[in-house]
Length: 279
Ligand code: URA
Image (cartoon, rainbow, N blue to C red; front, side):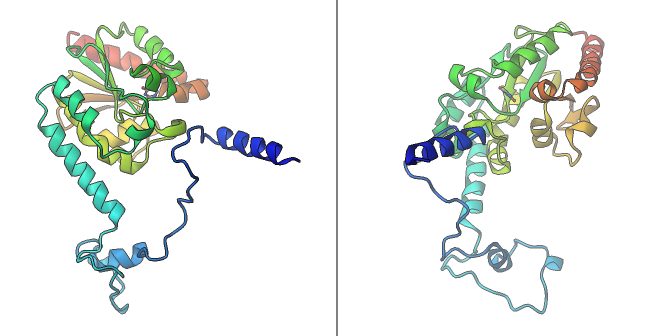
C-alpha cells in the first residue's frame, strides 16, 4: 500500500469510529499520563475530605501529592467544580428564558461549545404545559440551532402527534446545549457542569408535566440509579413536585423498533395524565 492509501484507510477507520471532527491542529494522546501528574490514588489519599475513612488502608503511610498545592484535588476536578459552581451561580441569576439563553451563550465552562457551531437552546412554546428534555444536539440540530430536528426528532414529532402534541403545545430542550463531537454521548463531567442550566430552564418554564427523553436525561435529572428500562413508563417526580415520565429515546427506537410498542404505551400514559390535568 502507498502512504496515501494508508492515510485514507486510517481516516476512514476514524470516521467509522465516530471521530469526524478535527478539534486540535495536532493529534494528542489523551490517555498518556504526564510524568509529573499525581496518580489518582495519591491525590485522593492526600486530599483532606476526598475519601471516606473506611476507604483508607490504615497501615499504609499517607502519601502527599508531589505538588505545592495545599489540598491536592486534581486540576480537572477543581476546574469541573469551578465550572459547575459558575454555571449554578449564573443559572440562579436568570429571571427569564432570555436571560438564561444569554448566560449560556456566554458560559465558557463547557468545552463542547468550542467544537459546536451553535448553542441549541430550545424549540416550541415556552407557555406549554408539557416540556420534553432530551440528551444533546446532533449534527442537524447543531447546524440549525434547534433541538430534535434530525431523524430522531422526526420520530419524536410522530410520537408526540400520536397523542395530540406538537411544537405549538409543547416545549423542547436538552440537558446539554452543544453538540458533542461525532455525536458521542456527553460525559458525566459535561452533564454535571451543564445541569444547573437545564434545571433553571425547567424552573422558568414551570411545566405541568415533564417528559424525559432517553436514559441520559432521565438519570441526570432524576438522579436515580435504575436505568431507562426500569424507569420508563412510570410516573416519577422532578424536585418532588413536577409529574415526570421517562420515555425511550427515539434514536434507540430507530435502532430497536421492537421497543416501539412499549414507547406507545408510555405515550398513552402521558395522554391520560394530560387529560386528568385538563390539558
Ligand atoms: N437527540 C437528542 O437527545 N436531542 C436532540 O436535540 C437531537 C437528538
